[in-house]
Length: 420
Image (cartoon, rainbow, N blue to C red; front, side):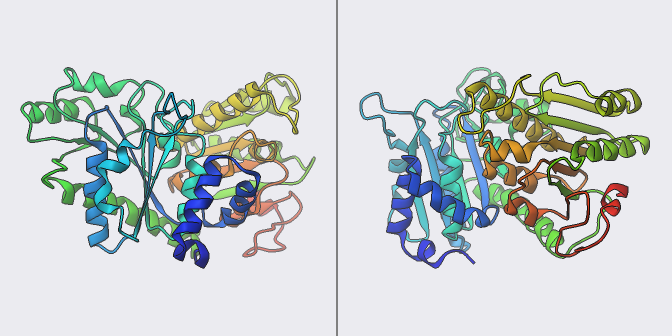
């Protein structure tokens, strides 16, 4: 259950979110305590061209969600004010009809120079909202640009919004953004040219396209049903995992311990998968151009296996990591999200990601979201010492290469994990 304090005291929640956005030490301590609530809310990302009506569309969705008894948290990312360094707050003005609703919490945050359409604090603020018991969290990004796709890494379902009047509408949203959409929304569908935009998008992509008029409520029911279908599918996946459903694929395995042959074991699993005609992909965090026998053998023996080393050929300073190391680890995690989204890989190994977490090169929140987003057709393996308990609790199988540590399979020889 969510923390009673956070779910009933909105003032405390507002203070915590303010401290998170200011990156205060006490907020970081509180986030560690709240990490267990990650994944408890359905997160919807909303991005699109400026002026497409994203905020008005969100306000209409909030109205529908509240009628259905859902509590809602909104994180609106606004451009940073050049004078105050804060957010412009324009989005909150357009959602003012919900300001006095105790079931709705709206927070505007400034980008503070962060790239990707989100601020650096958004994922942590979302965790606080999850811990407060919000059923649905909506994230609105600054707007569309070639690199403003970070919402894909955080949200369970991404809406890309456009509207008539942008000339070549597909080109207006194509640059790095069209691919992240789960659903395309053509808002302001009462305007001339709306049908043409819908048709162009349907011809230019295989994504579902929904026409809406957020002010009049047109298409909001259809959009809501689409979102709820996605939410229901997510809940079924979570229930299946809690029941301990045994799947040929779809497992999350974690290899921990120091010097136990974790990478070798994951390579062995990838070779076995390749022998059965399955496609594998290994992303090695913090390892750049390191040559060793098992890796070279795997490259030669497994035609369906791709191995990508994403790190520098140097040690990482745990206490003061170089920005280059942080960037490379972030790129590796983004690649993992792309592969999960594409869903064409049968087995995905994130080698040494636990160490990258321990060194604070990537965020635990992001890795948990990756696990939640993983399709059941994919097996995910995470290796590295110091695996966080939040990841271990989500895994179907955990081993230190001596015995199974998962509470359902305590004491079983680790060979079972390797054979699977």
